[in-house]
Image 1 (cartoon, helix red, strand yellow):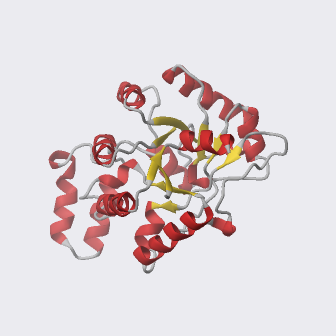
Image 2 (cartoon, rainbow, N blue to C red):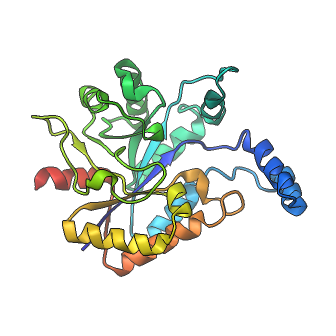
Length: 280
């Protein structure tokens, strides 16, 4: 039996600068039909990045529940730093009524809520502590898990996460490849004397979509996970489930779940995996 943890990084819930960049990209490629479709999309295709209803419908179909990592980004745009533009213009308000309502709906349905630590929180104890407190005020109970935005980590990250009271992290993984980073397949305890656990992330949507022989490698990863008794952690961003803006991502996710379900996979949240790991 293969143990599978489904997860989603909630980076953004609405399109912003993409309303400009996607039509321009289509125009540069000479695809005028796509250019006009993107240009009209604010009126013909509203709220494409929400994704939650689609995710819930797919996972219910397979009797699965996932962990949703919500982001509370505080970076503002700095004109001299283009990297900040993407972070700032994509952010959402964690107190937005839509977000609060969907968090409560997810929890009521058995999904787990975790922290998607903001871009700089991996090295800032006070910042991560505030983000954890805000999310806990919304859900009404302690938050156990985290994945850092952009998988940012440093030598002090695990210690910071542990000190704010988190129980597990799932940031150990590739940003441009799939599979187990540095051959670390099994969950591990990076802090001596602590029950704080790292549960490695195995597959992320963007790198998977670009990987050579991706389905062949997917089967190899499944077999490696089964053989070693690890946990296959899959991460798909909610904004990638729109078939117009991000064609193929939703279909890939469904195919993954079909293959895993056919092999008798045990689907679980990362929190449920943590409980199994501690109990072993």
